[in-house]
Length: 130
Image 1 (tube, rainbow, N blue to C red):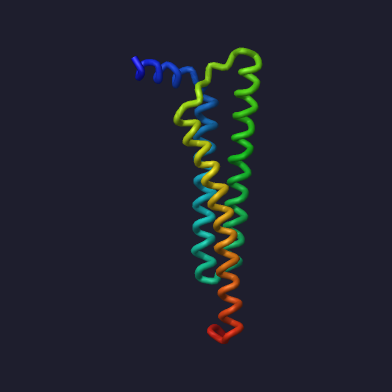
Image 2 (tube, one colour; image 1 turned 90 degrees about the vertical axis):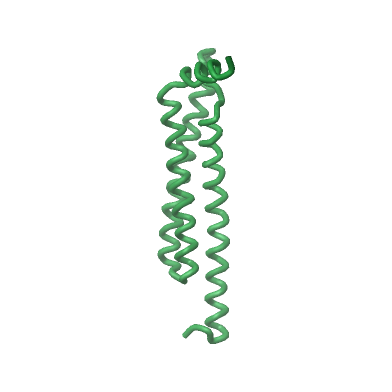
């Protein structure tokens, strides 16, 4: 009975809502990947490349936020009209989790890159790197 109910709830979701959830996952996943690669570039003191990757990460996260906002607006509109049949399900929760993870990854990456910049400056100051 439970699986039948779950399947019915999933089938009530529109293709658009499912596609938006997948867009959230894709954009946020890209943001996380760019942020992690930026950290790797900063670790090797390639700060220009790290900056470019962080800009890409932030653009992807902005796109995810746009999709998230449009999904929320659409769900609110349907609820207000009384036509909302979209359950809050695992796909949506998973997508929103990716959005949050992307934001956290970008914030941490910025701090880690700042630390690598400081390490490089300190190393130059004490003569470790010429």
